[in-house]
Image (cartoon, rainbow, N blue to C red; front, side):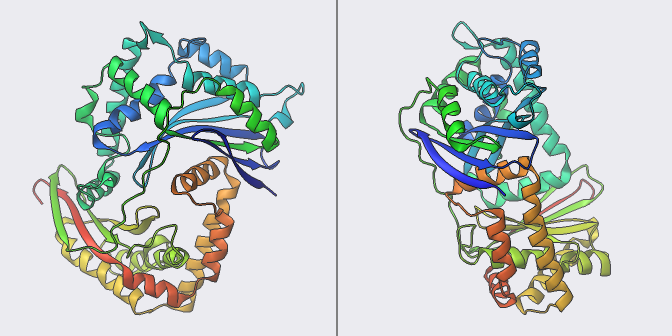
Length: 426
């Protein structure tokens, strides 16, 4: 049994605490929320990696590793995420829970102090980020951006979003653009870091056996000296209810298999909408499971795709279909994907399809409770959107959602953009 509480610790600083004795480790995260913008996304993505390189008291990776070893081999990792049109940058840490230390010593306070030290008192050279660290982390960021491009399945989805949401902040990638990496200087990164500390909302998350009041006190102490200068609101994500027209975009790269991705607007349905549980069920029936129509018909029965699935970005109000096809089968696969969506709109489901989709979705939501990292991501994401319902709450709502309601959400879907990645000779 876990109890979730939420408190404001400082101006623009909020803590979501999950009190539970289920795990032998505890999770602690500190995340700065800032509007997702093309001009700042890349430097924002670099900052947590620069901070993780060293603090004033632990100026290099070796001394940081020693400090973490003294915390029973704990870990602190940089995190760069995109939730709706908010970029989320910071750290996620994992440590032995205080209930399991051999000598009854406390780990949480020391872990929070170390994480606060990394956030607030980084290692500097002449008052700004270390030039060597900046150069090395810029190279690492370039590698991470290129790695996403090399994963052609992920690349196709990213390009679809970029094209579908051109002119919207959502079209910006979570790590920014490779072309912007080289422009970053230690001075520029330092000035951006100072702005993030002063004006960004700071979301804290804890999961473990410590009492919430104690967690509040420990984190308030760890964040002593945090500059606060106002402007902590999170910008609302723009949601376009319907597509105005269908755009067809194709790109030629050296690939052996075509990547067909399709973006739909959800009729304005997001995670904050009453219809959202029905949309989740609709997605499971359409393409979210191995018993869904896309998998069983487009992939298995007709062999038009190597893979085919759908997913929802619950904060932006879009559904994305991702598939791998032979170049020559692009139009047939696109037509059949739309035909399966039409079948959903007509409510053409067998009882076993409905039962399988519902059980799979409910089970997937409840398994979040078995993973501290997935719980952290859930509650951090909910905090960005200003939502308070739990995975269990959503599971119950999906369990109660009617097929008729799911059909109505299918009818609300409108195709916005089709992106096809094909070979240079395709």
